[in-house]
View 1: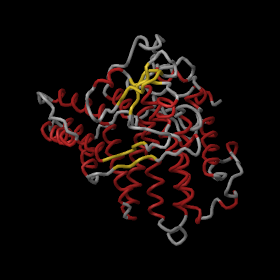
View 2: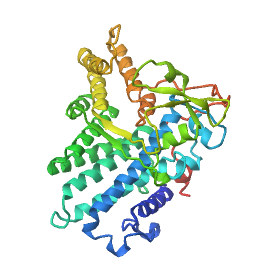
View 3: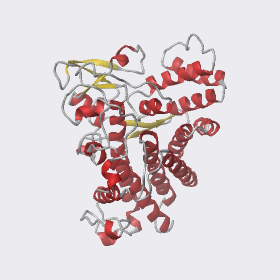
View 4: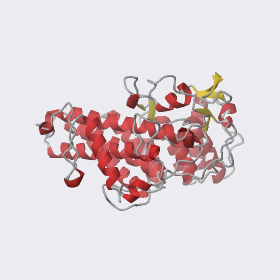
Length: 412
């Protein structure tokens, strides 16, 4: 069953939008007072406000998901002993952990409820836009593109990182179900963006589509969409300091709070793309030296969501997976040259060696962002950190993908 999470996602979406969502039906009805009176929710002039709420909900969920996934992967080590904060970096987040299952943007890294809220909000607003007309809503196609594409990214995160998924009271399904939904929503969003000539959303949809095609091992299509992304393209999730839901959660908990320190392996990569430094002080646990990434420097630091750089790495991966090793490596080496590095030497002798190069380049280029390292650990079955945390001596758990919450299974 998924009633509990659906009910809460519906409620959180209503609060975030400042409205009472008409899509919350029957026993799951949620009525919250807000800035927009309930009776006006069907007013098409509110469409831009609703779409902005879709984006805000996703950016909140993205900050939580990518930060928690980074800490959970091999990029960080826990530098505190406070439960549940410590659990995020020691593979001990379980299906019973409420901080994960129903944690909000104001808390730690709660990813389950926040991503469900984001995708629910996107679906609900998308349906409203579909029911309105171009005469009623200025730039309707552009707004539809945004709702579809940001909703697709919520499904993408679930498909990459969750062990199982379930939507709107439906059955528990493998994560590929979320990836398939993401694939569909990206396609719909790209069509709307093309109609609206919204080039920003077109590129965001292309990067997202290439990523989900990669996840589904549709290598030819992944390479095609990745190759269509405009040179220099980059899209960030905006962050701010006006409220906790707007904070850059990785900077807040890893650097400002000092709850996590950059793992030892990332401190000596000698690569300009992995900009980590000794913070010059102890971590939350003062006996642990705090190492930080300079990719983020404040609560307001934006968090990269998609880029041409990522698209090129997907394209290189996809080409090599199709045994076009020389073409894939040419992309890799061009990027290395652009940041002042030499070509990969020795050149890979076979396909597996070339795939290993791609994994290593992704590890460096996309470090501390996007949930990419967690995705790679899972899709390539890379060895996880085992034994005990070298700084706290606490034993690691066995969590890999994010578990399906017990409270959701039980309908609590």
